[in-house]
Every structure is written in C-alpha cells, then in structure tokens.
Amino acid sequence: MNSLLAQDAPAHEWYRFVLSFPPHLVREYAHRFELGGSQCLLDPFCGTGTTLVEAKKRGVPSIGLEAVAVSRLAATTKVDWSPDPDGLVEHAGLIAEKALAMLSADGISDEPTSVPPPDVRLRSLPEQAAKLLLKDSISPLPLHKVLVLKEALEGEHDRRFAAHELLALARVLPTQVGNLRLGPEVGVGRVKQDASVVSRWLSCVRSMSDDLRYLGPLNATPSRAVDGDARTVDMHIEPNSVDAVITSPPYPNEKDYSRTVRLESVLLGHIHERSDLQAMKRRLVRSNTRGVYRNDDDDAWISGDPEVERISAAIEARRIALGKESGFERMYHRVTKLYFGGMARHFASLSNVLRPGARLAYVVGDQASYLRVMIRTGEILAEVAGRAGYEVEAIDLFRTRHATATNEQLREEVLVLRWPGTARA
Image (cartoon, rainbow, N blue to C red):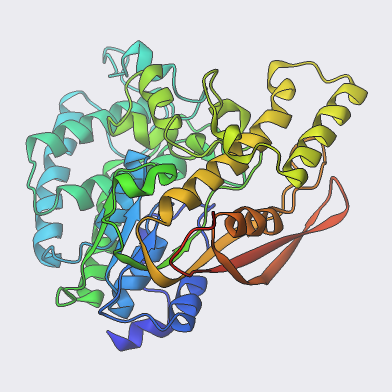
C-alpha cells in the first residue's frame, strides 16, 4: 500500500463532487502533522470522504462527520475495501440481467431511443419527491429506467455488495443519466430525452471492482463516517480522542450545497418530501440564504465580533444602496453572521474531543458572493478560533482564483491551528 501514498487511488473516482478539496492537501498535512497508526484523524465536514480515503491509504485511523445521507454513503463505501471484486461484478451482472428483462417486458431498450413505446406507462416519482428536483434534471424515460434498476437492486439485495452498487448508481445519475451540469453551482444542462442506465451503472460497478482489486482487502485501518452535525461534534465523538483534524468546511456564499446531491438523494430514497430536505439543511452550517430558518440563532455565538459586524453592515448598506429588495437579498447580511457563528459553535464543541497538542488544517476560501463585499474567510476564522482557545500556527496560501465580478484575487488557504488543551476564559 505504500506505493499508493504518492498518487490518487482510483477509488477517488467512485464518487467525487466538484466542490471536494484536493487529496494532495490531505497527504501534505497528514505528513506535516506526522500522523501514524496510533492516532485518530477527524474530518467534521467529511462530505464524500476525501480525507478518510487518504487517511486509510496512509494507515491512519479516521472518522468523519456528515449530515447529508448520500454523501455519507459515498464516504463510508469509499473506505470499505472488503468486497470480493469478482463477486461484486457477478452479483451486479445478475441485477443487470433482471433490470434488462423488466425493461424488455415493456418493450424498452436500455440503449437510448428517445421515444418510449406508446402503450407503456412510465414509472415516476411520488408528487412530493418530484417537486424537490430541479426542473428537467432527469427526463421521464431515463427516470423510468432508474426506478426499474432500483427495484432490481432491492429485489437482489446482498449486504456484501449493496452499498457499492448503490454508490455506482449515485455516481452515474447527475450527468450520465440526468441532465445536470456540475460546476460551482449545480444547474440543468442539455436536456437529453433518453440515456443508457443499466449499462452505465454496470460499467461503474466494474470500475469499482478494478479499484478494489488494485487496493486490496488487507488494509484493516479503521475508518468510518457517522451521521452528525459539525456544530455539535462532542455529541458524536468520544471526548479526548482526536489527534488531528483535516477538513474543508463550506464557504460563506450563496451556493446551495444541497442542490449538489438533490437528484441522488431523492432517487436513492434519502429524502422523500420537503420536510426531509429541511431537516437535512437544519443540520448544516448556514452558508447560504436557502438554508436559513426563522429560529436560527448561531449568530449569537459571534455577537460583537468587529470584523463580522463590519462585513454584515457593509453587505446591508450595499443592498439598500442598490435597491435590492428580494427576501433572499434581505438575508445576505444575516447569513454571514450565522455562518461565522456556526463555525464558532463548531470550534467550541470540537475542543471537547481533541487531545492536547492536536493540530488542525481547515481548507477555506475568500468569497465575494454577497453583493461583491469581500469576505476574507481564513483571516476571520483564525480570529474566531483564537478566541475559542486555539493557537494559530499559519494561514498557508495554496492557490488563488480571479473573481471577474470584483476583479480581485480570491485566496484559497489552509488555516493551521493547534489545540493547547485549555480553552480561554
């Protein structure tokens, strides 16, 4: 396994979102923190598991917190290297045969035809679930094929392979089967009337099998992703058990991260109606106005912070000057406070699970999403962490990007902290 430490394992391709952070940063800071097999690495915003995969390759026990179910499925599955590769392909082949037979009985081919047989009633989602999807995110005929494949998966369930087979479906859904366009914000791209589903899914399973064969089952390094809110870390992790943190929290911007996983979350059955979506969002750090709720009070954790107050006031003043009156625009100044308040709450909770001397790396980026008012995220989080008792070791620049709206360079940085063991009074 040592040869894998110098390169990205193919397993990274099982399911990677556009917004995930580079694996090489995990390797760099794991090396810098001198992490080994007797220590525990935590990623409290673990997403689809980049940190967990890199830790397992290095032989470092790890744990991740993730409130979004489909992301947690990805993270958990990507560090499960136990399935027999040949057995996985054989089982997936049986499922594919069953799904193709079900489609054939309706006169439908898995190959794109654009027009379903006129006498076939296509399967569809329940009304409440369908309303959660972006319009045209998946066309009716591919949706029918997905629901048929899902029925075959459920009918041939085998716990040894089920998670990997589901993850393969999640992997092909957004762009290969659906019509989504992935980028900084998810949107609908070219609408295709039909797409292969079973064959694309089976191809992804075979790719996973190749990865498993490459990685091997012998790495017994423990790694897991658990359901949890990063603002209440100490409710999910044992006290005084974590030696290091490497993570990338959401940035304060107007991008709704839940849209990134909406199609997969609905089609895999993780959310069924709007209340499920709201419940998921309530467990996330507030980073955009579409995730803000009336009774949110994380801003109390940052009350009186001069820089956050200045930014919030600047955003509101600019909104008024520009005559922006929509409900979302009126919340821009508040979501900034809720974001940094949520991160202050996170740092306070996190301190209860850290061992003295624990070192931390937060991958963050500057933002100017709110009416072009610059938010230097790393600098502010350094101040917030300092007040919570952390020592700021460094703010390392790892890249810049040009913001066309403001003509400024936005920094992406790694905030490096140390927990001395005692919170400041």
